[in-house]
Structures are given as C-alpha cells and as structure tokens.
Image 1 (tube, rainbow, N blue to C red):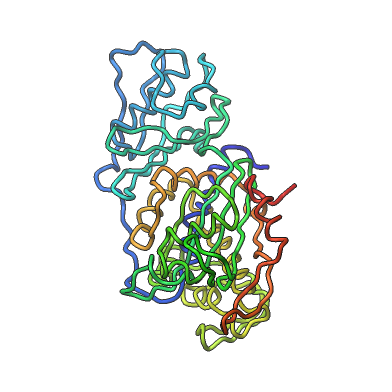
Image 2: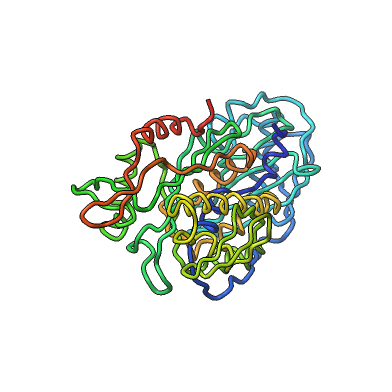
Length: 404
C-alpha cells in the first residue's frame, strides 16, 4: 500500500470520473476552463488572542478565513489552544496535543459546487498534510483529509460508502432525470484502500417500489430518480448515500476536452455503426468520440449488454487514472466543471470526501464486474433475469469491497 501522503495524491476522484466516463453519447459546447475567482491570493493568519510558538500559516490561493481555520487546527494540535477547530469529531479525538513539526506553508484550490465553496489544501513539502474543507454559509469547516505530520489517521467520511452512478440516455434538451437509465453502476469503497464497481445490466427485469415489474432502465422514466433508487435499494439492501447522474450531452467534451482523452485496453476490435465507433484491439488513447462509442457499443460485441456494462467499467477506471495524475488540487475544479452535467442528490461535502476516499485506494484494487444474469423475454420484450447468485454479490458489497 502507498503511504497516506501518496494516497491523497491519487485523486482519481472516482465519483467524478464515473460521471465523466458513464455519461453517454453526444457532444455539446466544450467546457471552458475556469479558476476560482479572487481566491488565488496568499493569506497569512493572525490570531492575537491565542498563545502559541508556531509561526503563522501561509496558504497560497486560500481565502483568509480558510487559512485561519488551518492555523487553528495546527495550534490546537500543538497544544496552543483548548478550542477545537471545526473538524470531524473522530479527527479531533485522534489528535494528541503536543509539539510536532507543523508545516507552515501550503497551497489551496477553491471552487464552487451547488452554491457552496469547496477546497483542498495541501501543506508542507510535497503536500505532507492535506485538508478537505467546505463553506456552506456557516463558515469554513474541515470535512476530511490526512495528517501524517500528526500521526492522525486519514479521514474521508465514515466508511464503507456506496453511491449509484447513472448514465441517462437523455439527448440534448431532454431531461436527464426523466429519461431511461442507460447505464447503472454501484460504486463501493471500504475506506481501507479497496473498493468495487458493479455494473447492473440495463435490461434487468426487476420489481418497482410502487408495484409491477419492468426493465430497470425504464424505472427512471417512470418515476424519476426516486423510483430508480427505490428499486435498487429493494434489490440490494445496500445503504446507498445517493446518486450521481449524467446524460448523453457533454460526454465527448468531458472525456475529450476536460480529461484530454483516456488510455484504454480495448479487449477486441469493435466496428459498430450504431455506436459510431471503429476501434482496433489493444492499448490505445481514445478521444471523446471514441470513448463514447466504446461505452455504447453492444449490438456487435460478444456479450451484448453485459459486455457494454463491462466496457463502461473499463472506461470508468481509465478516466479515474487520468484524474489521479492531476493531483489533489484538481478535485475542486473538476467538481465545478462537472456540475452543469450532473444531476445528484449528494451534497458538496459528500462528493468531496467520496472523491478523496476513492483516491486513497489503489486503482488496481478496484474490482470491475457485472452482475450475473441471463437474457430472456417478458411480455414480448427482451430482458435480463438476474441469477440468484447476485444476492451473494450484494451481500459481499456491503462492506465496500468484494475482497474476502
């Protein structure tokens, strides 16, 4: 396993990469790169009412209030104050106040998601310590991070964690949340460096919360995200935190313009006129349009819908690898750039900490599988009947991983 400081730098931001990789299939205006307005300044904290021997903290790009919060954290950890900073209780309880070599200089990345500011701060040489923070109208507060300088265990929210990522088949101008669910993946993280991505075939024939049975793809158009999530919760009994959903529009721009393409091991040659893709087998760099076709192809590939779901998982992990290389300071901007293309009931804090928890896992430790089932028919429609063994899969996934 990598060290904690290496893990936070693995900003795969899996949930965001999922939203990037599992959208679908048509282009829109390229996304303009933005920077957080007026926060790119270096601020130095001054705390005249606190007695401490620590030099003031200086954080490039941080608002003054965020810099003060970081300084408060280190002053408390050094025993210079008995007032705990705004941070998770488990983090505060893990601090043993006393002298330590506190980093005093750092850098922040600040952006906006759903009307709230989110930030990542890295402190010390090579980002020895890292902070995740949000400003939700009640002042900045620390919501996660890792602090090797203090010997405090990394915290990215209570684990294990489970989120549903959905690719709607909404075309430009259509409502993402009331179209069909074209791709459905469960993302699970155990908080210990492992996790899993499990694809659910879109034609899985399942009961709906209000009665009746249909393909799970139809549940979204029938009753929106609530009906879809209700059906998935009834199926799996997993404690999903929520969903992140994106439509066809924006996929090419996000994969091509934002991420700059993805490196994918294409398992076999694909020439699919319906998905508008022609790919050779082997490792290759896919642009947005090619990645889109790879995610959509099913009529001409062995395994059909099952293969397509597996390919979406491959794309997901490939996109995660691209984001990983960007570093932790990329997370806030990726959240901001992704917002116009996302429909989600997750809070900015949940997205931020889930991304960081994903970053703490080795990508190689994230399993990519598809729920087992067999094709059949119901009411004259082609459907997928899940195997009984799928119940064992959900039970295994409850702890955030498929590993024993």
